[in-house]
Length: 143
Image (tube, rainbow, N blue to C red):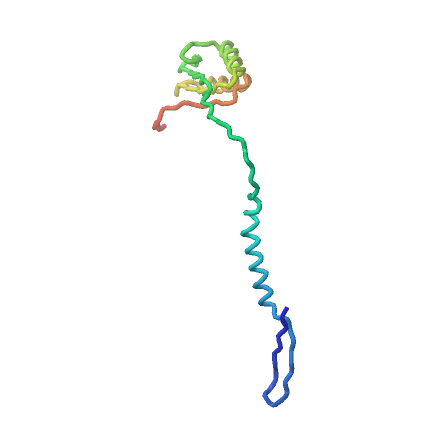
C-alpha cells in the first residue's frame, strides 16, 4: 500500500503533513484481477481432455399411426371411413391406446352435428387412455 503525503496550509511555514492510504491503485489491481478470473475460469473448467467413444446415431422415423374419427351430421361415428357403433368405438379406442407408439386421434366433425356427440367421443378417447387428440378443420373457413 502506498502512503501519500499531502501538504496543507499556507506557504509561510505552517505546513501540516497528512498521511492517508491511496486506494486508487488497489482498486485498479482488484478490477484487473477480477477481469482475469472472469476470463480464465471458463477456460479452466473445459480444459480436461476426455476421449469419448463415438456412436452412430440415426433418428428413428417411427411415426405413430393416426386414427381418423369422423362424425357425420346425424352423429354416426366412422374410424378411417369404417362405420362404428358407440360400443365398438370404445373397444377400438382401447385397443389403439394399448399400441406402442400410441396413435394420434384426429377428430373431424360435421359442422351441423351436435357438440354432444363430439364430446362423447373425446370422453371415450380419454377413458380409453389416448393421449393425443386433435381436431381437423377446413383451411381458411371463416364462420
